[in-house]
Amino acid sequence: MPSQKFSRKYITRHKKSAQLWRRAARLTPGGVESNIRYFRPHPFLADYGDGGYIYDVDGNKILDFMMGFGALLLGHNNRDIALEVIKQLESGSMLGVTSELFIDYLAAVQKAMPSMRKMRLCNSGTEATMHAIRTARAYSGREKIAKAEGAYHGAHDYVLQSLDMDARMARNNGYKAVPYGRGIPKAVSDTVVIYPYNDIEGTAAILEENEDEVGALIVEPVLCGPGVIVPKGNYLKRLRQLTRKRRIVLIFDEVLTGFRLAYGGAQEYYNVRPDMTTFGKIAGGGFQLAGFGGESQIMETLEPGRGWRNATFHAGTYNGHPIGVAAGLKAVQILGEHPEYYDHVNRLGRQLFSGLQDLADDRRIPAWVEYVGSIGNVYFTTKDEIRNFRDTLSANTRRWWNWFIHCLGNNVLFGIPNTGERAFLSTEHTDEDVEWALEVADGAFAAIAKEAHRHRERAPAVQLQAASEQTALYGEAPHPSV
Image 1 (cartoon, rainbow, N blue to C red):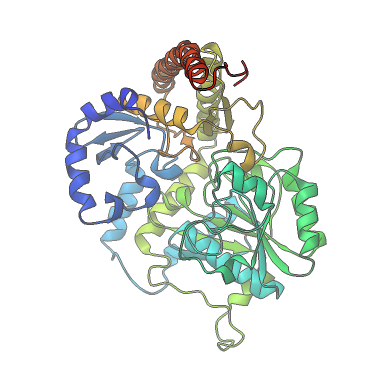
Image 2 (spheres, one colour; image 1 turned 30 degrees about the horizontal axis):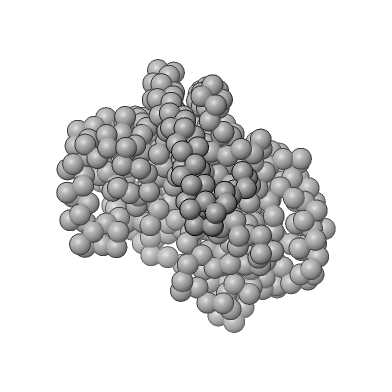
């Protein structure tokens, strides 16, 4: 929890949010729609979004670098998308049968990501990875899957494994699957193999230990479960070679990176072609839309008419929902027509995230800012590089909380209120927005530096008092290193 000193301004500016949140907490666990939306002292409640800003119920205009969990590359309330949604509403909000719009959307996504020869749609990233894994298992005939330690692939049991843990558990655990929270059967964990991201030798060794048992390997091309960790040493290309050699279906989870790092996602950005891909967020234009696809022979395991014994099941009442498809199609078309948008957001990303690193260095705050394109995160750590999930466990989470809430108290939202999450730029953000964000962030760094200095000044007095107490009790002073 952030210290009261750092959260005081936030509390003062969000009194109505506090009242409404307490009301919500009587109706739903934590007063939020999702566990990761909860934070102390309390979440703020939005009124509406516009461009690169959120306006809350207390009248605050908040510079938004969360951007709908990364879904809003084109900003809040994009007018072109809104008009397509209104147009579709006039034709029906729910049809329940296939429309031409659905076909047009699939063709647009395939144009951006040609590795998906055939696709299916669903409604969330969780559904996309769940169905992709089932399809890959059916194709490979093997029951186990491999996922990277720390990777987030949604909220179903098979991927809620080794998602978070403390440093002690990580040291003692090896790479055994650890269920994230209660309610996940051990039998499920036994079908999941955990491998270390950015360590191709370690990954190969673990796959060798599970010879002929792993049917699919799923990876976030940029490891975003614990923040932002970019692939190093041609890791993705070497992973492609490794999985092809072992006849393991390689699944790129592009729910977050798809249409963000490039029009063709991380597979275009890093020039690696996976067997399967999951997509969502930006692909839905701000609406509930996701999907999965891949090579024809893999996706054909979903062909209907085979009988239940031979079929791989995929269904959903709202799959291909016309409103989401209309919004997603327009978003994908806009991005395909405006490659300059990527130049814009990536330039702002460099300006923001390199600026944050410079500010932390100037204030002598140990920190590492990791970013790629328009995604980034601040780790308050003494490490000079972040390569994997375990490197993030050294980060000072209390310091991050204090920095985050100080910035939010000054109306700049640096992503999700969780140290393992990240900040996003949108096409609607400007140079002036980034300059203002850096000014606010510098104020937060300065406050943290001041707090750290105060603790250092206080430490000798505390040690002297401890020495006095030790002498009184035992007749001798403790060793200076104590």
